[in-house]
Length: 481
Image 1: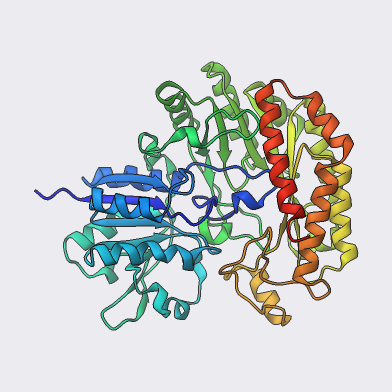
Image 2: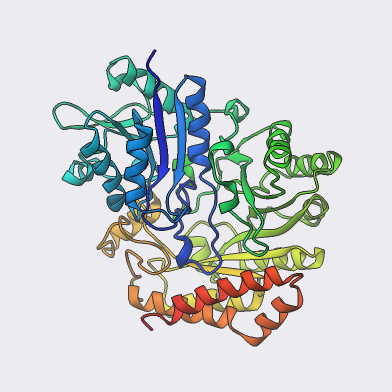
């Protein structure tokens, strides 16, 4: 019996949060963005094991490896299947991986996954650069991958596999029907952490290993810029508390990991589930520390108190704009007042905050953007990040930008830190970049912030890590002006 092998990888094209399709953040471009483990590849690897395919995981950027190392691995492992996690900003550079692989072995079956394929113009995939990609997954990879591999191994017609884009013999890009979202997330096996180099993914302040735990999928919110409704649907799908606890215990007992990022489109959406999970963490005496994301209107003192008791040390809020008119236009559904209340409540309970802000919407003037930057200064979150809005295809934002005539470039090749795709009706791309830089300098390099941060540091290791992020920020903000 022939042994089937698959190499699952992040290509050596810069540090990005590749496995988190909604975000696709460039790690080095952010002010406090940290590298996270490739859980998407870990989930796929666990699925492949169920059908007798031996998986290997390689995160070349995290391991500081080059294209030569990728080529060496292809020669050593000799995989039948190549599965790559792509991002919209890097997709054309990512295709180099498949080109190298096809040169070494024309029979290797190349599969790409990423948010880009959900909504991209199919004609764009006819470009010569994509000819080395056999299939792209459109949907949750865990529900698609085994059917796809079975079909390929058995020589079946790929048009019968739901949830893919593929190039047929006529060089046509064919999209099959969508695979329905999985409603019972407990059926998905835990990510294959035994194949990951877990020590590479760390909590940014202490440098301790930090694992990502996906607690739910789906978001009923309607923000015009967000990919979540396309990627994971608008219905909240939650894992059971018991299933989440079992994964936490595996991380603690088998891998010695005690720091976690609870990943969800909005972790605090269901108050009952949040409190139940917190109580179980306490009951099991796991002794963990964790962070999660939230909306400012899905938080209250009871919820936060239980989160704090169970080890939560930071909550990240998608605050977006400091201008309530813009908040309405982007359909965020929250206000400046709610942002103030949420951040103050966290401060009262001793939980750190991470504020995410978004500038560059079509209608924004410099004055409107300054409202956001002023709110960021007022809230004084422990960490702050300012994104420049990117019009991803398939979002309402994309259609609005198109209708207003400002969609001069698509999202491919662009990022929301230093290379936005578009400006606004009133502010150019270059001005947005400079406004972001100036705001971050004001937030992080003020004597008040530096003093407050130093007071709360508990070890030399924290001092060193904060200094590293500070140096990164200085390099970013003073390079090219």
